[in-house]
Amino acid sequence: MSLTVEKTPLPLADRLAEIAPSQIRELHNLYMTLKSERPDMSFVALHFGEPDLGTPPFIVDAGAKALQDGAVFYEPNAGRLDLRDELIRFYAEFHAHPITRDHVVLACGTMQAIFLCMAGLLNPGDGMINITPAWPNFTGAAKLVGADVHELALSFDAEAQRFWLDFDKLEETVRNYPEIRLVNANSPSNPTGWVMTVDEKKHLLEFCRRHKLFLLADEIYDRITYTEAGRTSFLKLSEPDDHLIVLNGFSKTYCMTGWRLGYLIAAPEVALKMAQMQEFVTSHAPSMAQVAAITALRDGEPFIAESLARYTRLRDLAMDKLNAIAGLTAARPDGAFYTFFKLPEGTASVSFCEELLRETGVVVAPGAAFGAGGEGWARICYATQDALLADAIERLGAFVQARL
Ligand SMILES: Cc1ncc(COP(=O)(O)O)c(C=O)c1O
Image (tube, rainbow, N blue to C red; front, side, top):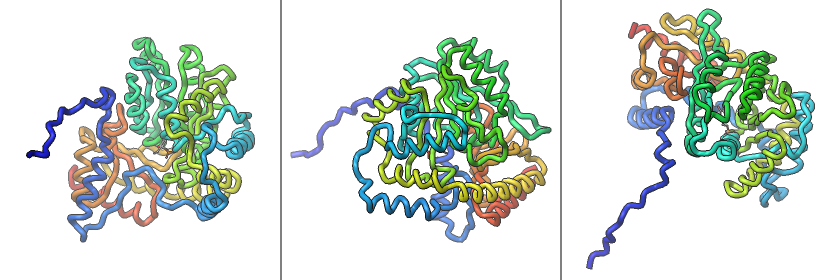
C-alpha cells in the first residue's frame, strides 16, 4: 500500500504576490556563500543598516534586571504606562512638544508600527506616495495591505551634494492619482542621509493638510543627525488637526535592533485604533525591552553624544575617501549613518555590487533596492570601525578605477 497522499496545492493569499525578494538580502546571501567558499578572502560588510556596536551595558543591565524583577508577563496593547510616561517626559524635554499616554503605541520594532499604520490607514486600492530613495520596507508593507505605491524620487543637486524635494512633482502626483491617502517621508533618511529642512517639513505638513492626506513621518534617525533640522520633529511643527503619525524606535539610537522596540505617536483616536489592532498582531511589545527602554531614555544622553561624535568622524572619513575617487559622486549625509553615492554614468547597481563583492570582498547595498531614483547609486553603512571603512572605500576606489 502506498503512503503517498495525492495533494492538491492550495493557493496562497493573493497579497503574497506583492512580496518581492529583497535585493539587499539576495546580495547578503551571495556574501554568505562566498564567505563559506573562500575562507582566505577578506570581506568588509557595509550593506546592512545596523550599528556595529552592541547595546551599551547600562541598557543591557536594565534589561537583565527587568527579567529578574519579573517583567515577563503580558502588558497593555499600547505599551507599559511607565514607558509611555517616560516618552511624555522625553518629548516634552527634547522636542518641547506635549504628548499624553493616549498618543503613544509601542510596537515590536518601528517596522511593526509602520505595518500597523499601513493596515490601519490604507484600504486595498488606496494610494501612498513614497518619497524615494527609501528603505524598501515602506513599500513592502503598503503593498502587503493592497495599496498602490507611487514613488516620488528626490532631486539631486550635484554641486551642493544634496537631495531636495520637488513640491511641484508632489502636487502633480496627487493630481494624477486621486486615490492617494498617505505620504510617507523619512528624515533623516535611509539610504540617502538626506535631512528635510524645517521649511520643507512645514511645506509638507501644509501640503498634506490642504489635500487631506495622512503624513507618516519616520524619525528613527532623529538623534543621529548633524543638523538642527534633523532633530526637529514634525510634531513640533504640526497643528492639532494634522493627520500626522510620527514613527520612532530604539534600534538605531541605542543600538537595540534585536530587542524589537519602536513606537508611533498619533492623535488619540488614531492611536486607540492602532492599539486595538495590536491585540491581533503581537498583542504588545516585549515587556523586558520596554523596561530597558525607560533606562535608555532616562540615562542615554551621554551615550548618544558619544555615538554622534563617532558617526561624525566616520561620516567625514567616508566623504573624504569617496570624494577622492574619480567617477563617483557622494551625497553629503546630514543624518543617519549612510552615504549614498552615484556610480559612473550608466552603471547598473545590482551587478556593480555583485562584482564588487566577488572581486574585492566589499559588500555595499545596491541603490536599485531603494526605489525610484536609487538605480545607478549604492549605499554604504558607515556605522563600523574606522580602519574597516577606510580599507573598504580604498578597495572600492581601485575597483572603480580599473573599470573606467
Ligand atoms: C527608516 C527606517 N525605519 C525603520 C527601521 C526599522 O527599525 P526597527 O528595527 O525599529 O524595526 C529602519 C531600519 O533599517 C529604517 O531604516
